[in-house]
Structures are given as structure tokens and as C-alpha cells.
Image (tube, rainbow, N blue to C red):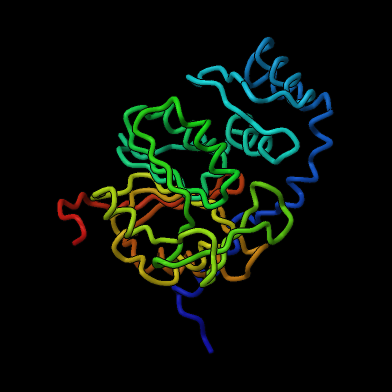
Length: 286
């Protein structure tokens, strides 16, 4: 059977998506003891700040990390994966992107301890940021790291394609930044859709939607996405086919269906989609 041009396009997009390998990330713990890390920190943050952050990481005294250009100190838990989330955002600069102009609404899906939320509030101080994190321990750290910023709203829940109950746990033994949610009648947290968030916060659009939700993207792009996706200007997403097959395929099929015109880019583990056909919509969902 001959493949259609859309099928071929989808296959090309899926094959170009970066593969997320959490085990490789966590196995880089040896890097923390290396001169290479110190050199990167000094190069990124300057001599004094780089040395201080390196010492804090080495001594596991990271509850008050000062980052040049960031308004408020960041708190990282010792004996956790927090340092890697910090490195990903502020050292490796995986979220240093060409963002859409003047974002007013930013949703941080899978906020973990709030590194992306903090970055956004420093880069776009007037934006409304809605940070979503299902794990209770991560949520407490998220609350701590965002407490000094205005117009940040926190949701201790999991993103799903409907209102439901979810069970959150470390399914793949990846630590604090690899928590997975699954639907369960006896689930210990609530799950909800992006449509629900738009109603709750009376949103007419989403300017930046960041998703790092450990394979739940396959569910939220399976149904109930038409309204919120058509009103989204930019998506930054990690696709977790290494955890569950078909995440990338599901995502790109929906993007092709909903967006008439868009740009595609990859940086680090992130796929970046910008909706070039987006137009402001004045009518909120009923």
C-alpha cells in the first residue's frame, strides 16, 4: 500500500523528535564531581557565582542557590534529581528559545520543582504563569521556588484529557523528575484537562504551553484537545516514547490536524511547535 504524503510527513517528524533517556541523564552523576562541570558553571555564571554554585552542589547545600539574572534564590533538595532539573534549565539553557512576542499566559505542565516557571517569570515578569505538578513532594518545592513571584498559580494535579482520579508514582525508578500518573478510581490526586484550566482561569488563549509530563502527552493529545490547542500559540514538549511507545506519533498527528501552518524545531530534549496560523479569539469557552 502506498503511503500518503501526510503519513510520510508524520513519520519524518516522529523520527526527528529527540529521544528522552532519563537513565542516561541520571547516570551523569559522576559529572557533578568533575572539573568539566566546574568549567561549565564558571563559563555560564562567571567566576564567583560559578565556583559558589559548584561548591553548593558538591556539599549538597543547595537550599539557597543564587543565579545571576534570577531575582530570587532557588532551593534544591539534596539527594534528589533537583540539581539535574536546575542544570537543564539554567546551565544547559534548554529553554533558551525564540519565544512568541509578549506572552501573557504561560502554562507549565509537569512543573516539577518550578525551574521553567522561575525562568519564565524572570524573562516575562508580567505574564500569568500556571504551574501544574502532580507529585506532593515536588509540589512543595515548586511552591517554595515560586513563592516570591507574583501572578503565579499552582495546581497540585495531573494533566489528562478529562476530569478523573490519578495515581502518581515513580513507575520507572527515575527519581523526583520522572513521576508518572495513571488513571485509577482510587487515585490519590485529581486529574484534569487543559480545557478545565482555561475555564477556571478564564483564559482566551495560551501563549506558551510547556509539557514535560512523562508520557501523559499520549493521553492529552488523544481526545478533548481541539478547543485549547487551537488557541495555543507555542508548545514546548518532551516526547517520551522511551517510556511509552506512540507518544510522538500521537502528538504530530494532532498537530497536523489542528494547525494549518506551524514551525518545527528541536532543542535538547524539547520539540518546539509554533502555531503560525494562530489568531486571537475573543470568545471564552462556555
